Image (cartoon, rainbow, N blue to C red; front, side, top):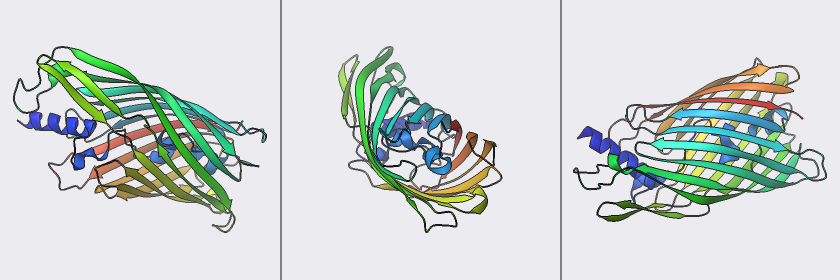
Length: 321
């Protein structure tokens, strides 16, 4: 019975049945500032605003709700590059993502392009961006047992490939009055999945359909620099899905000059998390950095049984070209 309940819960989370569990169909991130170019195709990478690096590449692995045998697991590869010739300021990049929840999952590959309206992108800019790619949705129908055996009975794996498009707008500006060495204000709004999908799979007794809906994201933050290369970064990630409560994630991290950062945050979904990481590079010039970060997330929601902890590891390499 417990296995049946857990599988039903993961299916509801993945496909967005009209309950509070519909709140998130796309992948979540604890260290979301490292993945802001995935969340918003118009966004500047955090390495550009914090270190002036116009090229960045990264990978992450996330295991969510470790008390569940069929818990969500997400793998991500990403890359981005900003041209800096000051005549045509363009962002290019892309990412590959794989997300598996029990018998359901999706794999997507995306390219990304954005134009930055700016006289000098090191100080301020407004960016309009688009992402485009293809997503393969898969389901192992022979493993589905929602209530009683035989409710859904189909043989073998099934998959469908669909096009996907995302859109975003993003703005940032250097502010002189913050900290000793100024800082950046930034924010953006995005719809990472513009095309809604009605997926139809075949079972032995007929068709059954699963629907994915658009998400609307907002990201806002501040990087305030201090002497000796320290900075503090409070940030907010707002997530909206139709017919579900708005979710707000509030976080703050502090970067020490000794190549260490720590952070913490909470969300209205009753999650709390902490994170920490290291910069392995030249602490004086910061011309290139290798970053390794770890995030720990725990849910205090009273809805259903405890889901356990979430672990996320992120690694990235960035440099100024």
